Amino acid sequence: MKGLIGVLGGMGPAATVDIFNKFVSFTAAGSDQEHIPLIISSIPDIPDRTQALLHNGNSPLPVMEDYLHRLEVAGAECIVIPCNTAHYWYPELKKACHVEMLSIIETTMGEAKASGKTNIGLLATNATLAMGLYQKNIEGLGFKCINPDQSGQEKVMESIYSLKAGNIAQAESLMAEQVATLFQRGAEVIVLGCTEVPVILAKEIKQHPEKFIDSTASLVRASIRWYEKRVGKTDLLF
Image (tube, rainbow, N blue to C red):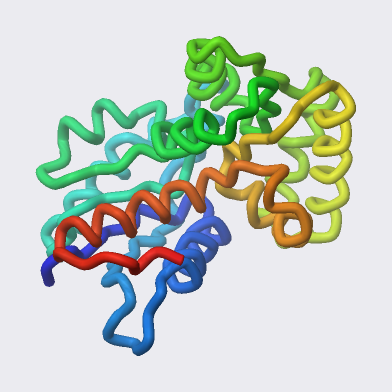
């Protein structure tokens, strides 16, 4: 199928559900047939990315490459990965990929730059922070990057793993505290640099969308624009 987009998900499943929901809700479709064609891999046995980068855990790269190629064989013409930390391996994955691949880091930074804000808060995993996936880009634009302090970052990770374990109320409470702290420290907008975070903060994002740059949403918008160009359509993006 022309324009078929492959989603390399499962990191984690809730984030994969979120990107699927956003493809549906962001598309100006009048019928089933007008929606973006997707093929989604949500096989959750990919090794933990943070454990691999910070604690000598098993590398997720071989498994990600395997599932990427399965998506290609299934007909995907563009690959997206709804996991920010996995983008540490983006150069290797892109090299191994035979079709188009979009970077969630690039799409998110494009929206951060377009926001006109210069004091950028950042909520991400320990590994994403340690690898500088966003800080280097934010600071490279001459902006200020505001991260949680050590105690706050521990709560960010506790929140993320609480969501993965199904404890949504605890995840929401812990993350909301860190959002408030970042704004108190001068953040004008907060980059949600982990695809679990938009799931955790869904209620707050709905109430105050101008306060956040949702990495998953940025990737979906870029994907829909890619699809429009691929099939020669316009006005598909809400």
